[in-house]
Picture 1 (cartoon, rainbow, N blue to C red):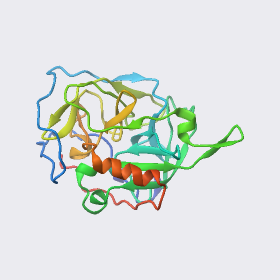
Picture 2: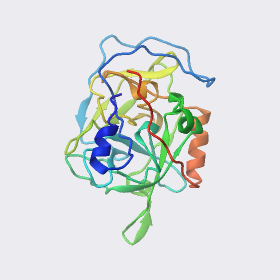
Picture 3: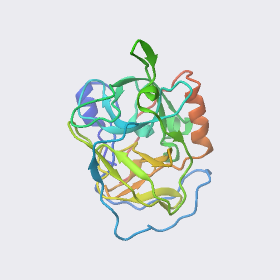
Length: 273
């Protein structure tokens, strides 16, 4: 992915990582570098991949902004939790405590019909925090609750949520919605077929450029993957990857759901493209 950290730093004067999807140089796809079990390698499902189309959006999906500023630079989505206040995104989208971020679900054309939600805590696997292991390029973000209709509500109460799933099977279709770096725009959506690249969940669909890191891969009401992982999501806008969701992501989700002390994340190194 193209590294946009300098863009964010110029915008907010803080050490905020604003990496987003994808850079233009194509690099070989190495396999997973830890002992985490992942599915075997397969080949792309089609030699003629689809192209993402513009859509007015999905209620549970929205862009991440450096608080109060444009452009948006990554994508996140609401995941069901007991506190009704959790988002999931790519860990490489987050720096520090995440407290400089806001989330705008179903954002389109410069409007945030379901409000903007302030991130208060971030959670990432220790292997991401210490080594930036791409197998663990997943983060959960807790957002502050708001008073609506004289009630204190979480973002899930307003827009709903997806369940947390596990790595998608080869050959199924997923719906991927994300936001390309910018503002006053619309989401893009594609329904590609999943395949595996040396154990990394993969799909081919043109259009997933800078800003779509963190975009959820949705299937049957679950988020089974998100753009991230290998090369921080991909080296071109036509092919996207995910870290494989398994027991480690479930454990991280459980820790985030408990709403304990959040983590401090550091900016990742180069995406290797």
